[in-house]
Length: 253
Image 1: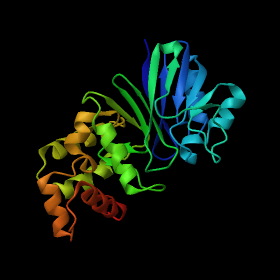
Image 2 (image 1 turned 180 degrees about the vertical axis):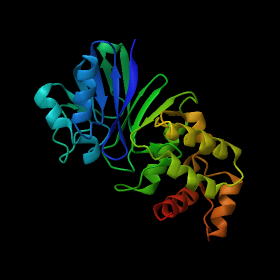
Image 3 (image 1 turned 90 degrees about the vertical axis):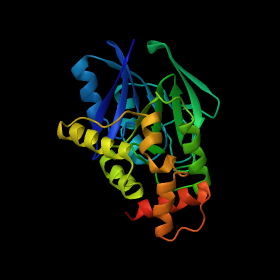
């Protein structure tokens, strides 16, 4: 048995800890101090680090953690990510024996070229590609790659829990409401999000089904959303055309 706990870090990051009563694996440790505090408070030892991509707010704590715990670091090897000791690629499987947990590895480029997702039954660690009610920016590769990566994730079972790396849900929902002002699921999620944040609780993990109902980047065929974009000058109503228009609008929203 194991639990998954959010460790808040930096301004709005979450470092995810997979743990039992003896050890922990952490995902995307952007800084070391909150991880070390979490381990000390629970009397745990670190046994591995998972990395979704090389941005500093996901890797900044790895070197310091490895000075204390000389553990393997799994991810996609890249010249600008010197921390990776276990290179992972599409189709690989990663077994965490301490938790009897096996991840399938998905390459999901479009945010960065080296971006991976870790997928186990009911569990998705997706870094900065899919957020609560939103998606990451396109820094490398193409918008088509980012769109394809999101479509892959949208095809996962609806009850899959989405462990993204940032607390962006409230801001993303304001954009979702602008896209689909008559979507009752968006309005309901806004209320739920406000209640969680008022209690200083994370809004994630969400679930794939909730994202498909409320996340505009997974709703590129919805009539109201398309009409909203057409009012803003959209001409290309293909799914990719709608997605590109959404991402550009969100960049400046």
